[in-house]
Image 1 (spheres, rainbow, N blue to C red):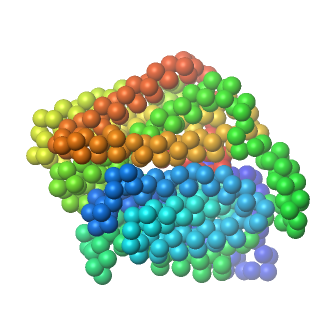
Image 2: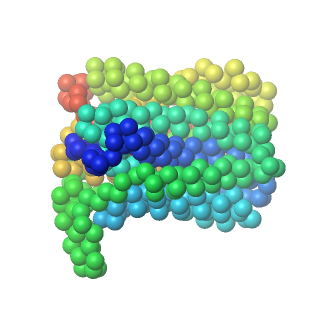
Length: 457
């Protein structure tokens, strides 16, 4: 996360204890909104087998329950940042959280798969509107000397949401609140969203980077001028002439596709195929996430600065070994496989992913000029999200197709793992195009996107 150095707008007439209290509530609101976005995206994955049975979702439609969210988020994220500059960060944040809440209601009462996909797409767009304002709101809330702590807190929230989302969704499914079943996974957002709207209006100070135009011509002029001052257009074509950036974007796309395929197929394999409960499946996902988090910190802080591209290559090789181990176990044990038996494979897959994806923001921005870093980082985030959508759209072919053809679930999941191995092989080959020596990588490169969002998930 990158913050600019600027003083926080504190009203001198407000006593310091009162100002600190308001700042604390405002911080809690924006952090809760970020957490709600991440948790909602991941916990719906756990509910998909139940949703499919309840709504009789066709295979072709099923991936779009999550894919529609990811695609809308990717499309709206960049424009949402620019709209916030013109119309005000607080206003766009409140519009986003309000739309997210309404979409959660519509998804929670959806009578058909098509209605649910539409509601999830609106959720994704609304999430992009509110999340894209969060870094800028935090800049306005905190003085320069406290922005580092705010950035660390934001990073912790991102990690917490990514890891705990599946477990939260599983607990909601198992508890079956008010007999709502999977619908509680979406409707739980409603009280949180309403509280965020009220507290956001009371506690968040409006911030506009530029005066708001009044005519359509002024809007165009303002956008063009803002684009020049703030790092150029959303896509700067010259960036793809930078070797490290082009390679990094390619790896982002591959890992987005990998995630889109693997996590959906994995959820169905564990629940619909093996008959595991949502909580049991979520615990496995939690262990996978823990392995990612531990090895990501190790790679980013120690291995990549010392070994350069070899750290990424070690991560990919570790994942390939994990895929081979998991594939053998799936074929050998079939539906009798136990949770503890797949722990080594999960550790290899999660740990390898952490080793590879953690340095990607540094790879992307290492040779990008300062004026274009915001655009470069935003495109990295969008590329990963689009890769995830591509991966989800392939699930009916990669995993569900073999099931429809009469193959057992173990064979279908093994087929999926072969696709994963192919993607990892492509990523491994791409890493050889990166600079060989660690000294070629700047030690102070940004760890997260310049727009405040992580370029990997």
